[in-house]
Structure formats: structure tokens, C-alpha cells
Length: 96
Image 1: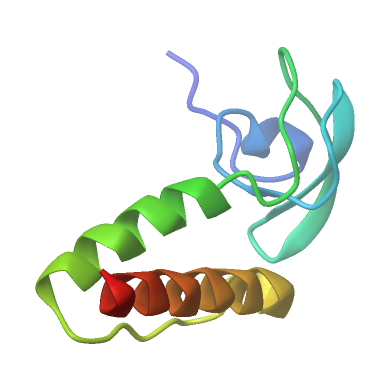
Image 2: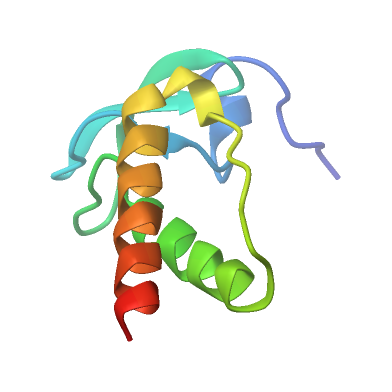
């Protein structure tokens, strides 16, 4: 039985990365500290995980008074956008 390749583009098949551009169906992803050209079935957007992060932040804030973010892959704009969303949620919660 052959083992899975561990280097080069063959070693990246099936790995999880962060879309840096829209994948429609091709674009760029950040995987293992490097930018790679990628292709996907269907369509995926840059920062698609932001909606998931909002859901998680909402659940955390339902139980705790605050939240601390660690910027992923030097994507400061995503952290800033998530922080703005959290502040908006907190203001709405205080008004309710």
C-alpha cells in the first residue's frame, strides 16, 4: 500500500486552508504557511469562516462577559470585522 505524499502539491490534497481569494472555481489559499493556487467544486469565498466565527463568538458571549481574539494567518481585517460585529452585538444586548 502506498503512503500519502507529504510534500509538494500532491501532499496538500484534502488539507484545510484559508481562502485568500474567491474560489470560482480557482483562486488562492493559505495552507501550511504558504500561498497555493487551488481549485474547488462549486464556489468558496475569501474569509468564508467569518460566519462560523460569529456563531462561535455569539455562543461564547452568551455565557461570558468578554472574548479574546487571536488573529489567524495575519488576517487582521477579519479580526477587525469580527470585533466590530461583537461590539454591535453587545450594544444591542445592552439596549434590550
